Amino acid sequence: MSIPYLDMSCAITRNGGKTFEGSISTARLHRKFETLTEYLLRANQVPAGWAPLTGTGIIVTEDARLAPGDTVAIRVAQIGELSNTAETVA
Image (cartoon, rainbow, N blue to C red; front, side, top):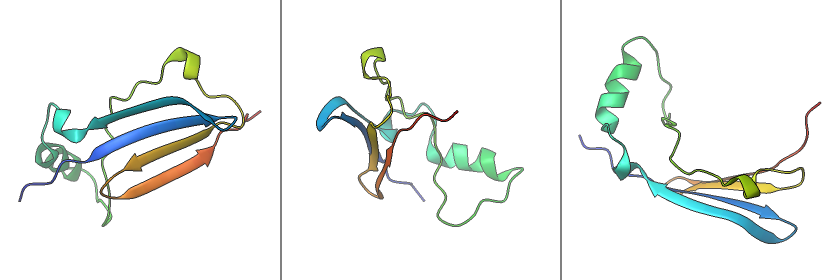
């Protein structure tokens, strides 16, 4: 069974404007999902609906680094979007 490639994007919004946008596809991974899955399952029980996070390859530039109040939206086209507001944790 071949696993489809996932298209991922990240956007950072500050004061109503985008300070960063980036995207990548898992097609650019050096290893196939099947290989990553096989390795993961050797020593772990994995719940249904899991998704491997591989460090997507989207690199945020230093001038767009997060500040309190920024909104970060991470989208996987085939799955959906997760959006959170950054805040300082003491």
